[in-house]
Length: 417
Image (cartoon, rainbow, N blue to C red; front, side, top):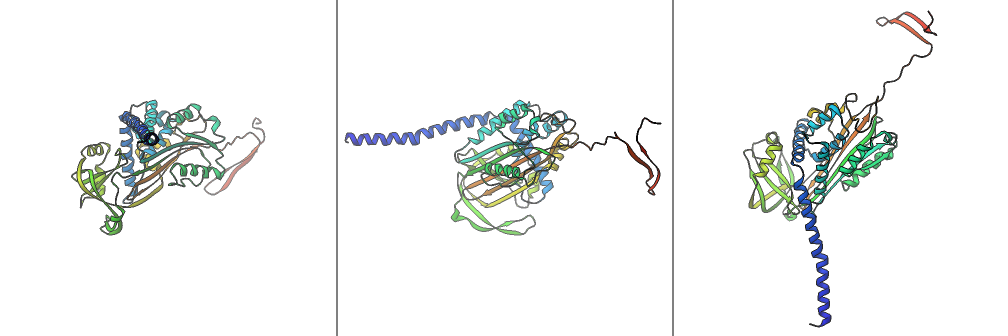
């Protein structure tokens, strides 16, 4: 081999190492750090989130009945937790209970959410997870907002902070535009108008796109019947694949794990046995039982999976009633809510005007794409109209039954006899 040829080979090999080996090595370091951070997230926060998720789900099922439902409980809990940073007194107590935070301090909650979000966003090169948070303030309300509140939200949730003219329709366009960008165009509109009493929005957006470890072969997708609860059938595009999957069969259902990317994130499908209703399976699911079932999954070789392609767009769903049923009534009360941690507004009062949620999901042969956005609208009560009798006045005394005026008079100087 000539010197020149040898030199070329060395250059090519070196280039390959630089382009392939080093980035892969760096990626492994990123994965190691992400996995370590994910495993270090306080189990109390994970338990709280999952308990809240199933509590929220049960109430939604009761309210929605037999229909498609798709939500991101993590998006809802993050948006509410940002709001929780400004809650005080009995309002904070109620939110602590609903969000299942128990004895965790606010500092712990914020730090663990920060760790969780960071670990998710670096979980997998083949799984895109984007989490965005923002606060939008009415321009003339911003000067009285507690700087400490904004600093906490910015530090723990990496929240963008905006102040805008809420009377300008362009602000609606901007907020929807932020959500659109944060969800990779999957959610384009959540709000249509801004009510006059609203002074702040706390917004969370989550985007997920993951490729199956074992993808479905598009050539094997065929039309098939899907049986509805009432016994009727509809025709669907049924995908098919085979491989080694984790599987579990319980008394009332069978379940399979469909992993994404590098096998760290997965979809868990729970299918009721024939003649068993989905409602009865869901009624049995909780944070505890879900965890127990997941731990019982075992690998099964050459397992055939048939799954319909589907797309669901859920929302915009107002969660006020659901959250009130869970115990957060006080947070929605214009007179009783206490969000003085956000701003001191006495004699007016801050309260949660609404919590709106929208989510979309598409499952196909390649994988899953899903997005969700949650908006917490903070309202400010208006003072009752002032009626100060400080000038001459006229009055009547009337019989309201008949409308007859019994007396009438005027007072020019109340100090005169």
